[in-house]
Image 1 (cartoon, rainbow, N blue to C red):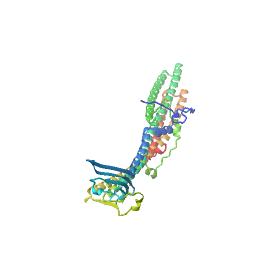
Image 2: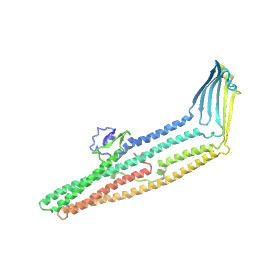
Image 3: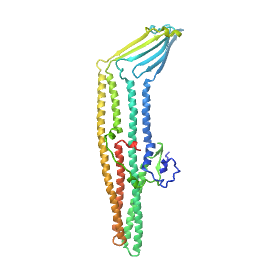
Image 4: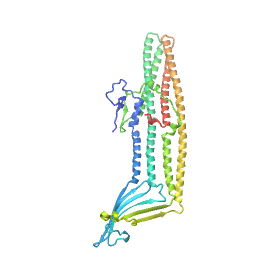
Length: 466
């Protein structure tokens, strides 16, 4: 079921219906971007990505959780107890690679394996197992925890990248709507002026002060303006729909702009103070580069683990034994009662291990090269965005002056027309030039704000501003 909601500026106010501001229908850029960052589904998804990193880190630490265990194995046949074996205990892995274990076992039966014989009261044991060769310095468990810690940090960077891209697209949609709305206002004013002029020309033609052909020209001019206004209205509606794609409530309910909602005045955008910056620290802190660095760190951990596989496996196990005897249990402890064991294995050619290590080295080198390429690409992208912003900003200054000059020409031509020293054709021509210059000015203003977004996007900095 599709939910349709009306978006006003009051949407982002804490007092939704208590706002008495007469400009309440204005939807500002900052309010729009706040809604996008807080409530858009992709923003919610980015937050879930961080939670996934935390969950993955918690899961990896489970490799070091203490474990209790127990087994019961019995056989009865033909009225005889062939064997009964009961075994239970606790195993505690440690970060040093050492596993500590303790437990109790009791075994009896007519056909019990002799090596399973224990005292009548059973047998306590406590000891340790330690890899003294391979896995002493680093092993799979510790590597997984370290990688999960890196992954947890990388999810924060991925969240920043997702927000950076989302806010760039949303911001550009807003400035398209801003341009389209104010262009519609320009054409609406032009229609109103053409309508007033047509009425005035018709009245003067009736009394013979203007030729009849001027009424035809005024009518055609009005019709052209009306067609332009309808096209501008269509563009406003379409850009409003594009803007609504980014408007959500709590990531679940889509929102739509009300027809009466409008952007702020042009002077608001003109007064925005932005100075593009370029320095190495901005580039080095870019989330995309940090993501590559995290990837290199993960591959370094894999390489270190592969290097560890070149060592022989040599595992030592030792357990002290103690017969439970009530209050005298510890008094009867004898260090000569123990079990121990040693395991050894080593592949003669190490072809698999050497191949894995070589591949790990290649993966690290490939990622480092990708990091260097990405760094240079971002550097060029940032410089290019700043150059484009400078160029558009200069064009905007020129366009501002052109609008003022065309307005002066129109005012002068209008005075000459009223005095009978000019023609309707020249007045219309001056007005068309003014309209075109105002539309061009709006395009440049919108483009400048979008280039500002490109600069912040290339710096990976949008998410920290809104």
